[in-house]
Picture 1 (tube, each protein chain N blue to C red):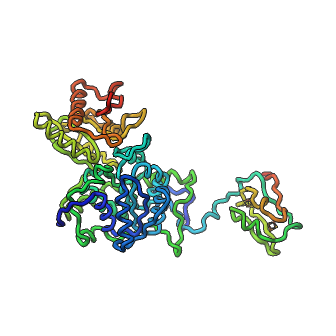
Picture 2 (cartoon, chains in turn red, orange):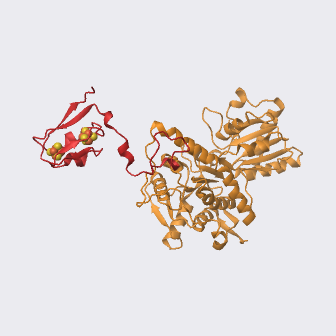
Picture 3 (cartoon, rainbow over the protein chains, first blue to last red):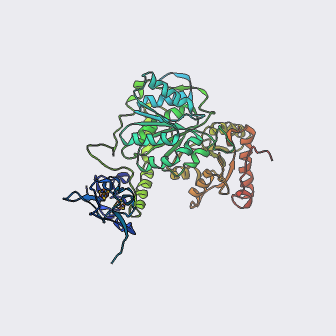
Length: 97
Length: 398
Ligand code: SF4
Ligand code: SF4
């Protein structure tokens, strides 16, 4: 069941439950950040630590085995930056054009 | 009809949970509720009740386990008192907003400090706006009957709300009362198996208790408010069916000799039966007095209360609060009764007294004093103003 964007109280599912599994992907948290992680692929050892630690599951593996954050979801918390064993994730200021 | 037997009220309440065939009990022992959960723990340990008894380290966890178990589709029972309920408070709100029909037997006890294990109503009043259905019993038989009915009311698919049954700690819990306890077969079909509306199921995953962003929180609260308001006719339906089947009738508001009374004392819980003795005494002296019991606390029975108090012989109501609203309108019951009558044209005056705090007994003379307060107000025409806004405590040493 797909939820309406702004349901009335009668349309809201029983007890405000969420009947659609995994619908948190609709909730883009990317605009929360002030700093964004940037991966330096020349130093990356493809260990996947960033992917494991990211609380937003923002990292996606590319076809070469590198990990890239999806900025639509990355909140800019900096956990990946702290945990990366190769120290190849730099937090850069997010500039909105 | 079952035989009348002497039984400790706490044990009878635990037996009600057994007869309702609960699936999960999670509770933490606290005076004066302890005998209830002790008995249930024994029943489970002895194999006399096929339920999961979840032992926990605190009431906060007890209520959390109850909400989780109910969300998984179990019939759930818990019991607590006073500080225990205060510790549960955070999750008490979740039980109602997640619409998990947990049944709670609440042995009313005062809140600290000073530390008091004795009876008053400050614990339940603290939970007034949690969205639970809240009903008062004034004796052991009522506590037993209402505990059974609580499952029917809360689990009704048109309701789906948690229910707390209030009964005075020690005064009722520790009393051995002659009571009608049903044979198991007699009550079995009164409480059909629980069929949840919304349930945690890995094959059909849903999320219960998600974040309510500002765009939905208001609508969620409106839904909850309507749910408890609409439980009212179902509560009466269950009371009616119980009366039909078993001959004991319960009403949201009950009266004693109020038909031609001018002054009534309005109260909740076991004090009502003592107040009735005072009514009889004063009636012998020719005074037109009566008693009104506000049995249903939430949802508040506005219409039933107005029917009893407005446009009738009653000119003065004395509300007995067993709890103080510090720096506020004396007590929560007074405040609500006054507000319920505010727009009525033909309404009685309403004055408040506080008594029976922290287990202090109320003597017959003190009930008479409460009626005297009513008479004084009626004579002077005062139901508000500086003097009546003061918390008038009957039985206080000045
Ligand atoms: S900054 Fe935080 S949210 Fe963003 S990718 Fe790194 S760990 Fe994930
Ligand atoms: S943690 Fe660092 S080294 Fe490991 S995959 Fe992520 S970016 Fe590469």
